[in-house]
Structure formats: structure tokens, C-alpha cells
Length: 323
Ligand SMILES: NC(=O)c1ccc[n+]([C@@H]2O[C@H](COP(=O)([O-])OP(=O)(O)OC[C@H]3O[C@@H](n4cnc5c(N)ncnc54)[C@H](O)[C@@H]3O)[C@@H](O)[C@H]2O)c1
Image 1 (cartoon, rainbow, N blue to C red):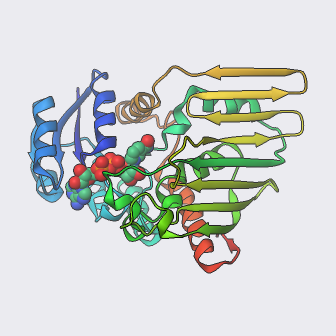
Image 2 (tube, rainbow, N blue to C red):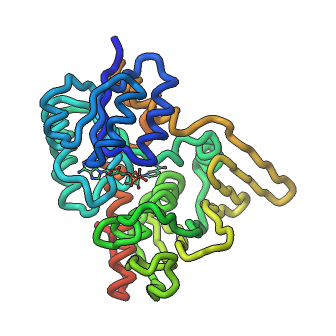
């Protein structure tokens, strides 16, 4: 039986998921919703499905097994809860929300309905990340250095508005905070210095921080720092480096570098993490076995809590503990 799939939010990342799903035999995208009717209609034409501009109408009309929610952080307005109540399994793009109160209500609805939920922290699905996790298994960690240093695209107004995106840490650098949690463990304290001179932003109508440095303390005693900037016109860097006494392991997209005293290994994963995350999600729906899903909703909420605290720490100038 094909798995009947709907989409809400048909922008950049939805296109990536549609490309992945078109490679999976049992995936059948049938319904597409975007406020921009042209986007919804284009996607519907591609798969021979139906287009909507209101997700409530779509959920009432379509017999969906699964829903991909690819909305900007500010636009999560109850669709997860309505879908879960109908027994529809959820794939939710990161960050799962703009605030924790909303995320808690969604988590409760998911648990009550017993639906499967996978969150799009795709870095967890790179073969390079998998290998890094194996190499770090059981090792004490001294410290972590991570970065999401780059520029900011023009097309997405919501991204540069703090009220809409939650800021750079909640929206973008969340991948690196999540990778740190995935590879090292829970983050329990954060302290942030933020550079928020709007004149340095690429777009004068933005109000997010242009750079941040976040100091971290992990529950296992490791310490770390994660930097971000969206103000670069020059090439930046994205990735995470984990320091153990005998071995330094670095992950950047699909590349892993492991360095020891007399040995250096570089590994490039050729697989597509977006395809792997959809395979894991559909396998869970088909078989009930969730073991291939690398980030569920509750896990993603913990990353959200860390990034919200990092953002708040920068504004308050105080050290914050994550509960
Ligand atoms: N995992 C990844 O690699 C990755 C990459 C890019 C984006 N993302 C995440 O995906 C989300 C979307 O990002 P994007 O780059 O695709 O954004 P986008 O701006 O390209 O697309 C978002 C779409 O949502 C639509 N939309 C907004 N409110 C809506 C509503 N109420 N109902 C229906 N449609 C609505 C917009 O019209 C737009 O077409 C963000 O949370 C982002 O962080 C994840």
C-alpha cells in the first residue's frame, strides 16, 4: 500500500523532501498546501495531486497517512495538533517551533495520538556523523567547538526577523547545537555574547543578531563553544569538532576527519541524508519500527530549549541553566 503524503509549506526544504520522496516507491505525495497558491499548484502538478491554500481544508478533504510540515518557525499554528488528532504521522522540519509552550502542546498531542514523528535534523543522517558517533563512543570529551558562520539569503524575509525566525541560533545554528547534543550529550548551561549591530546585517530590514559566541556546559562535564554569524560575504565554516584526550573528531556536512597523534583519517559520506531521513520515517510508518528515526519530537524540543536559552542569554547578559 502506498503511503499517502501531504505537505504544508512548499518552499525550499519541501522541494528537497519531494525530490527524496520521488525516489521511494511506496511514497505517494497527494496533497500540497501553501499560502502561495502557485507553489501549491506547481507541486500538485508535479505529482498529480491536489493544491490547497489552507491546511484545515486539506486535512478535512484528504485521506493522509503522513504530513510533511515545512513551515517557517512563526507559522506553526496548530497543524501538528490537528493532524495528530486525525492519526496522521508527522515529519516536522527544524526548528519545531518558535517557543516551548507551543512545542509542549504538540508533544502532548503526538503522545496522546501515538503517531510517529520525525524531525528534520538531517545532519544526524550523514554517514560521516554516524562514523563520528562510533568513533566517540564511550570516550570522555574535553571540549567541543562548533560553528555556523556564513551569510544570509535574500529570499527569506522571515529568517532575518527575530519575531518570525527566533534568531540565528534558533533557526540555523540549531543544527550545530543538535549535533553537539547528539554526539556529546545534554547541554545544561549556556552563556552568550551577541553582536547585534544592524548595520552589519546583509539586509537593513533585519533585526536578528549578526554574530554570537555561546559558551556551553554539558551534563557530563565537557565544555564547549558554538559561534555563528550571518554577516559574512566571504566563505565561512559549518561544523563541529569534538576533542577527546587521544582523538579529535570533526564533522562538517558529509565529511568526518579523525586525528590522533600519528594518524589522520578523512571520510566522505556520499549518501543523501534527506533521502535517509525519509526512508527512516516511511519505514517506521510501514512497520511500526521507529529505531531508524534519529530525532523524534521530544528530542528536538530539547535542542529548541538550548537554542532559546542561548538566544535569551545574549539578550540578558546572564548565564542560563536549561531545565
Ligand atoms: N533541514 C534542513 O536542511 C533545512 C533546510 C532549509 C530549511 N529548513 C527549515 O524548514 C522550514 C522552512 O524553510 P524553507 O527554507 O523551506 O522556507 P521557505 O520560506 O522557502 O518556505 C516556507 C513556505 O511556507 C509557506 N507558508 C508560510 N505560512 C504558511 C501557512 N500558514 N500555511 C501554508 N503555507 C505557509 C510560505 O508561503 C513558503 O512557501 C524552516 O523551519 C527551516 O528552518 C530546514
